[in-house]
Length: 592
Ligand code: PEP
Ligand code: MG
Image 1 (tube, rainbow, N blue to C red):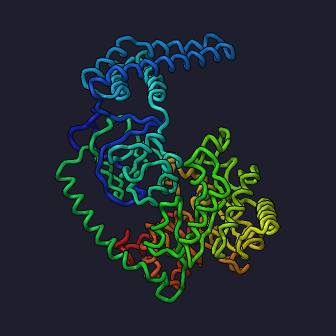
Image 2 (cartoon, rainbow, N blue to C red):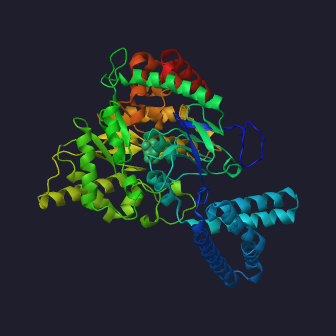
Image 3 (cartoon, protein in one colour):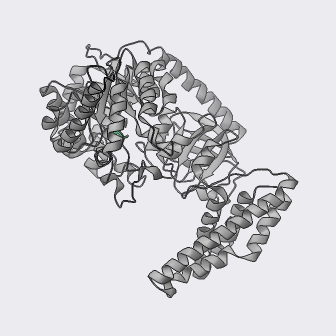
């Protein structure tokens, strides 16, 4: 919600918008817009001799758009009828609006700007005027113009991801939503911060932002259409503020605040070599979640004990072909070496849900989070699954690699996956290919059915790792990426704590260890609950490790156990959350 009601597209005075902070930090930079349908409009200066080329590019995009709309129209006319198809005539009329086209060309010529920018500006001004007429007919015409303009911009532009790879100035990206593949493609040296209209703390773009140490805000509703690219913005990932056209005074104040934050970071840095032990000597392992190779140096830098979750799907998401077995071995080996003397847990491909790419061959699904994802995809593509398992086994030369299956929902699925793993290991043995002699195998507990049958699953694995992001989403029926319901995403809900208790008890009864690798592990407010539940390992984005250690070192395990025994029986998550926040404020206010 904006603090100012200004409707002007380019504020010249400071305007503040409030969203949900999901990754700490402060950055100032030029605004880059990424719209819902993945086009970015950036202002670029052109030389007078480039004008003709820009106009040719524009005409080609208009022609291509016309052909596309005509094709859709024809298809509709033959499938459902001429009357329905005629709505596309209005689109063609908008596309060919002579005065609009002329204004765009004129803007390119007179302002010497790229044609996509000029086109976007002209369409915006046209549609604003139409809407101001407050007449249904013109409102519909405005919608037609906007619809068509998205198609034209796409044709002018190509893919968003390509743009995110080829930035030329440091910028702050504001998007309706960012897919994990967009985030994976990003030029990390030039993206200073990320803000999205959609999303929540556990959406994958937020997770990536944290792991890349980029300030990020989600849930900034209805902002993108009010702003122009290129304007200066400040992102405050602590308070969730997105400040457009910040004044010198604001920038100065933020500079001061940043200094204070830096001082806390320096103190936290000193915890790197210390052990995560409670005041009554209860030891917990703290390891790192890793998405991409660039994360590796951070693992040691932040004092993590190995890698508790390597999300391998990012290897498959930021390229257009499947990585070969050898390419995968290379990556897993680097990860395994960087984790020594600790372990590396490689999670097999967790594709589907919001993690998609055309070459993965996942069809459009009505409920992708309940669909063909995680282990279901791997079992449906045994060729890919075997290749990945072979690569994981081959990287296990130092015996510190462990393998983990995502989205397991029952024991039959687990047995199927394990059988394929056994076959792969046997095959490697027969081929005399080195693979280490011990490979622990675990499952992620992220589906309520798995949590409730943890006793059964525990008999077939060496460890559990709770994927709390999904476990909470499926338990509370809250889409983890939907900002409209993000207030109901409550990790301290008694139902969630009871499920976690079931899982931990089942693991310990069966003499296996249990970790948490979802974002719950990185939320320092929730750590007393996880410690009190008896979780053995916490795995989180590397940048969160010092804070997690600090929280653990202030807690008393025996007391935390007693508190949890009460929290699981409480009526509501509010009571639990309130107590947890009080504990955090009392014991470690400096890291909140
Ligand atoms: C989880 O669900 O908690 C998890 C760690 O997996 P992801 O966030 O990749 O779905
Ligand atoms: Mg998950």
